[in-house]
Image 1 (tube, rainbow, N blue to C red):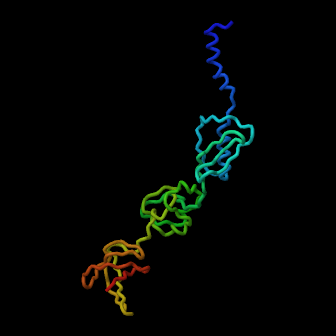
Image 2: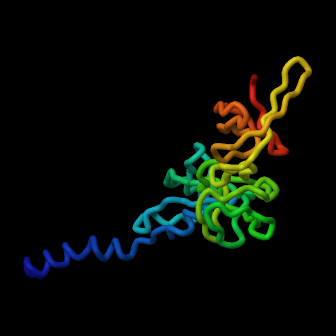
Length: 214
């Protein structure tokens, strides 16, 4: 006959022994089933300590929402797994570091595939979009380039002598002027008419002339 203490010890130990003998479904297999449902690209959020009963049949995965996959054991349990899908996108990246104000040449640019969900803003997709543009800040190799990282090259600099061009009624008048700031093509800049000493606002033309309104 078991003594009371001996019996109590066996009773307490029984659930532990039963639990240790219970088979659980490997977490990695649940993750694989979830990712397979979205084409194998992405990340599935699962707690490594997850304990689901082992399934005798292959797991089934079905996309439930844009960010959730239902993984189920046929005839058994069902689990909803958060999944972040990964969509590859071609972007323009720096092949080498550049300094602030540097004009970008083709050899400074390359392309790479990046996870679109991790990209901020709207990255450039074609190196031709960046060639000839000026870096707004210093950037290291591998930086993904967006339009906000670049500026159009300044073709007019403060102090430059420029032609002030006024057109009205088919008549064009050109006078000498001096730029009072830096500007790129199609940007506005303050200029001084060297004849009248008046300060005007004009728009920079591709050739460097400043178009002013009479």
